[in-house]
Image 1 (cartoon, helix red, strand yellow):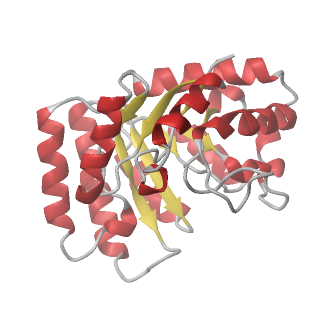
Image 2 (cartoon, rainbow, N blue to C red):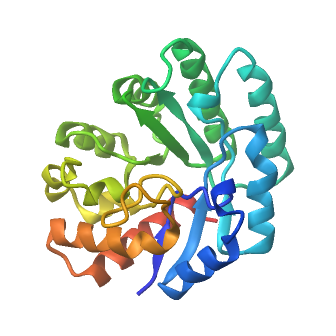
Length: 255
């Protein structure tokens, strides 16, 4: 059984003491690829270093996280665009909007997302979306830009069944992670209404560790726990969940 972690910050300083061991643990558990979303210009070096040390396993994206959008966001976008012109990346991400941490820069977040959606079209790349407490704000921009060429994933999806339906109609996937294992996470009411073809799995490590490790550092080896929970909710064998979600991830990223 093989699994793909479609969203993991394995380059985070939280792994500086044991990154090699964490990657090895994941591989031993059947995790074959770890896709790494970028945050801003400060995370690029660490992300690319992880790619260099674990080629074919740790695969980078390029994007500007909404919580890194501030008054200088145009400079950040310039750096991002410069990197996209230099080499291949798996996706534009992670990008989007976030109204959980700070609402004061929403207009700038929306503008940054629009620019990154345009870059995704230009480079024919999928978009990896962050939408914490801001599903409607993110969805509105994507829906307006969807011309049949956009594809991507709403990462760390924790929304309603209606929001899941809207994501599917948009032609995007749902990224399901550790929240699916939380007692009051809410996904137990949503996942029974979706298909495996709608999903990719992720850890979002070092954040959102699944039960029974909630509150501790998350890591890609816990992909099995997420797959087990999804299999239970969809009443499917875990081997089927692993196979289908991995195929979805490979088809999404194509790199």
